[in-house]
Amino acid sequence: MSWRPTIFVLAAAFLAVFLQASLGFFRNLLGAQLDVLPALMVYTALTLGFTTIVLLALCGGLWFDSLSLNPLGASVLPLLLIGLVIYRSRDLLMREHLPAQLILGAAAGAVQPLGTLFILLNAHSRPSLGWVSLWYWLVMAAGSAAVTPVCFLFFDRLRRALEYQLVTQNSFRPDREIKRGRS
Amino acid sequence: MLKKSHYIILIFVVLLVLLLLQLPGETMGKLKLAISGLFLPLFGLSSSTHQWLGEAKDALIPRRELLRQIDQLRLDNQQLQLRLQQDAQLSNENSRLRAEVGWERQTRWRVVLARVIAREPANWWRSLEIDRGLRDGLRTNLAVLTTNGLVGRVQSVGQTRSQVVLLGDPNLRVAAVIGGSADGETGIIAANASALQEEGMVDLDLLSGANLVRPGQSVATWGAGGVFPAGIPIGKIVDTRPKEFGLSTEARVKLAANLGALEEVWVMLP
Image (cartoon, rainbow over all chains, first blue to last red):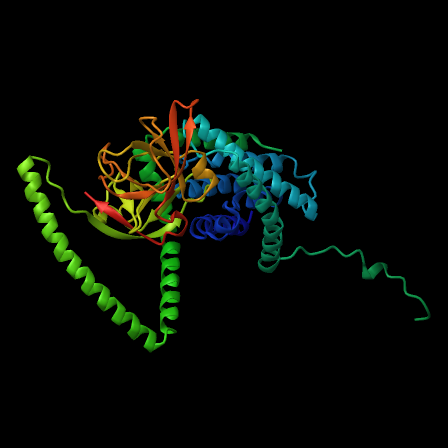
């Protein structure tokens, strides 16, 4: 197993969490901050292995919570859940298709905040919730849907650029060639 | 599809998360600061880039404009010096009178400037991180403000960074007084619907329940509770509405400080 894709995904998660904490563009524009981790998890679950899913959920969740007022670990389990559900049924999912990527991204972006809020409310935290939270939720789901195909495009190109290509089997055999004409 | 070893890993991760969620607040705060310390190189890079861009922008300002600004600053400085002299006299007089009446002596605010390095990534909290910590004399529960007014309170402190919880977050409640005088109407600033619906707006639950407040009245910290000293401006009353079938009153307060555009803040030292 090559560790390179895992390192790329973890580096992307680290950078994504940093950008979420330091850039206020989307917050100023839409009133809510986007979360890139669910989109990364969709890519990881459809492309990489179980270990990468667990590492992304653990590291991404802990990095996110460390910069937030969330209790440490609150974001880990929802991310892990998303990853495992997709991983278990990834043979049935068409990872190359854009609609599939969009729907999975939106679903992951919608489930992640709900799962985290469920944990927060059970951990006796009191997050700010109101009708406007529905808008935040929609923005997060839509943002995740938009980011998911970008993740696929970027990481697939990165993998193609940096990894050995599979040798394609050719059905042509020179010893079985039918030669026509006089020789 | 999942093997036995996978289930063992999953159980380990779930137990680890449950253990982390059960950690006491102080330990969790320290652990969070330790983990977020991994971002320090990126914060440093971001800060350097920001500084470099600022310097590049400054280099484009014409010399004539700079000279005009220097003259203006000189004038402002002289005016402030005069006002400071007058304030020093008033302060001495105030101290003498307080000593004669037997009231507690008022101390001057000691503040330290801090730069905002990160904002809350989750949408359901209001917090930020600043580049000052234990090394600079900070500790938890110190007031954080701008020249316009109160911003929040220090939630957790690391060696070089601190997390600040902002006004409008459910974790921060501030005792406030309307009109700025100690005998004014009092209440509690809390995060309710207003804080969510509109940036820079919080709710003030009036303690007496009497609807005597008027839009435009200023709101400042009361000083009760021991966290915030009295007299820090918070904002102005926008409107009031009855609560609990008219038994109490709630006012919406427009914050004096713009929390969405904070670049630098002042931390009030003990």
